[in-house]
Length: 115
Ligand code: TYC
Image 1 (tube, rainbow, N blue to C red):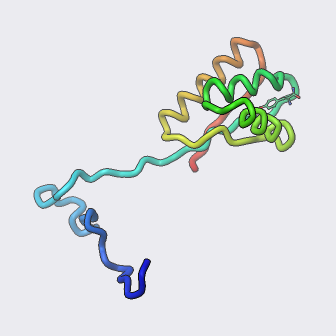
Image 2: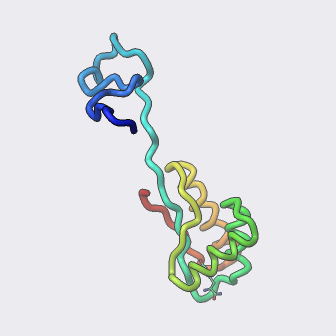
Image 3: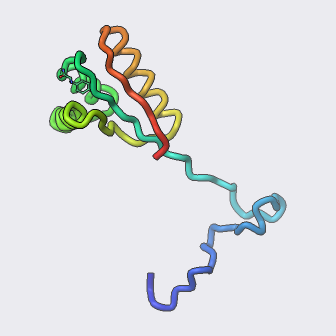
């Protein structure tokens, strides 16, 4: 931001609060940035480390080294970040992890929270 920047000035693409409901005079669609959600993996005493690494590779597109690092972080600290996604993507990933863990009969838990 350069010297003399006027902080209250509106951006070119900002219709401003005064025109929020004024459909007839809008110049662009009123788009909103989606909220983001953290997908977290929780530690337990029974899920094999190799299974957790596989899950991180398969559903979170991590390399073997990245997956191993995250898995060890969860193992040591109790919880760890798999990724940050829009609500629907985050929810899908949580369901995929819980589903594959249930099928394998491991107690692995996965959850999401607003970023
Ligand atoms: N604590 C597990 C073990 O010692 C490994 C593990 C890591 C389990 C991460 C879950 O999210 C997890 N086998």
